[in-house]
Length: 404
Ligand code: ADP
Ligand code: ASP
Ligand code: MG
Image (tube, rainbow, N blue to C red; front, top):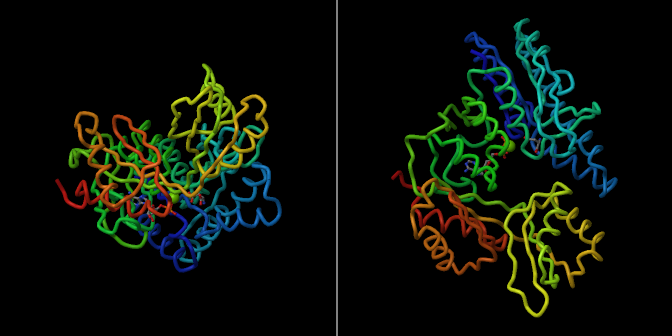
């Protein structure tokens, strides 16, 4: 079999963990499989590099940020190759440049476009365990790009898809996908399987156990995907087309604390304003999530929306630069908010789900700042320091700890 095994930052945080991974990889190699290992940067390396950059320039260009951040993954792969070699097995590390992982140009949030498998194939042919940097790509200027925070999962799935791997295993610091982040909701339940669509929704709503684009790719190319622990031998969670086991009203709760709300106050109440606001953001490649427009008063109205926290500064800069065009009275922001969402395939056909969710929050005396719904999810915005309590209350309300 050809197996892609991806290990996250915690799993390779120090020498001991690296050897732990090396041994697990070798075990699989000895069973006769061809192995590709994809790694993240060790521990908190990526965060530390971001802090280092800020000490030098808080306005560093995205190109230079990628040049810096991509070094974290490069350290991991070299160290892993050394560990495997030390244990007496053949290994070679490759970065994105060496194995031609071509991406779009957008620094900091590039998408993988293509991977040329020649070099990887050659190395596998030589019976090497091939260790590849996650999170990195190379754009058409031959510059290093990164795929967005958590992007190593996407590197692994893209490689598995391109190489037609039999299996793609995502090893992390939890032993599978749960009904909610087990660090926040203590009685969250591990799922034996979950469908691509539900996983995609959870990942997009903040359950960072898988990078959302990795799930998108897995669905598109039907990759055999499993999430499991690098520290225990427990069976993980299978992510697949249709999950027959779980057909529940609500499948999971997701919390996203990395968002901010922005309000444009006192905009002119006339046709085309929303179009102008959001097309300006789209032109700057800023994704907007929950949107709320107030009822007009006099000749003005307010529009508020949420964005990823990493885009907050850009958004404020963009509107500052376009102040004359929009003529708003004020621009306000709040980065101490969080989004709590529930996901479930059969929500649309079951009335009362939203009411039950809101009741759980009412019982906890938690105020809802914004609401957004779709056929398969309901999201609410709350104060960041109330998000964990909200997630627990909702999880309890739908009894997600129990198998239905
Ligand atoms: P890695 O470094 O291995 O990529 P991440 O920190 O990116 O690990 O993702 C794993 C984390 O995702 C877990 O430690 C857990 O706190 C969090 N998480 C959020 N939602 C869920 C969920 N529904 N199931 C499991 N883990 C979740
Ligand atoms: N090292 C990167 C990050 O911290 C990528 C990853 O871990 O997947 O976001
Ligand atoms: Mg991750």
